[in-house]
Length: 393
Image (cartoon, rainbow, N blue to C red; front, side):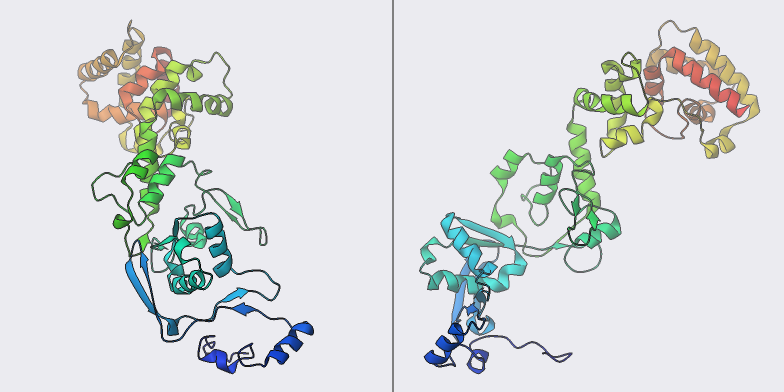
């Protein structure tokens, strides 16, 4: 038992001489213990005073004195191999050419080199590359799932539940990240191509990746940058593809019939075109664009308190009449009517444009106003304006 504050002794070329093992016991004592079923382990016997050198593809030539390497357990008392032995056997049998792992395994690399040597497999040894650690977005230390839980971002690729504690952690797939964006984001954690380009297809990553451009220092994870990558891939989607994926969601959420114009291809493509540059995830097309599919019942109170005056009712009633008389309901004619009606009423457009937005969408900000009005069509715009005027009056 180790007293509090004491450091556990290292099992190495010095301390092994004081331990009960096959080097300090006689052959008969060893045989007797084995015959009696006394549990034992098999360790790597590290030579003393030897410089162990290997080439790391990221860090270059690495030299470690064997005095710093402990006698790793290779076979446990139950006969099962430890990682130190098992991964080497696996790599040789699978003819692995490159062993790429985190830098926390760098201190164990000299022991692994010795195992290859002692088994006569040095010619089969893969090239090693020890990647930099992924660091917390804030503070110091390695990124953990608790950082994600604490700061509200996923750490796992998929939703995961601890089978022992039942603790749940969210995944990137379930949060709506595109696989391509996720891979692109991962590639840039500790690597860069040496250019200003940030968006890479898988084929481009394969073509441009090199260990020479992998950083030695740890890579700090930025959850906002991860969202940025997803946003870029969202903008690469065609409006048609987004509309097709959005249709069943809109239909179900708003209980729309098959013939409802709001789930028609034309309407959804135009809605997506208005929305896609304002969101980072496909799910936000519904969350932030709900007013495109359902008339509001609640109106932005801050805007109303600041902008609404009862004397503006005359302007909006006149605007409703003028919009209703339009034979062609297009962005150009809508914009002309709004500005013309404002001029006739002696009102500056800046006094009423945000109010107009609130009346038709319920919100003080959102997609392009004129484009939204054209999307709704004349009848819907008139209905929404009349409904809003009754509410504020």
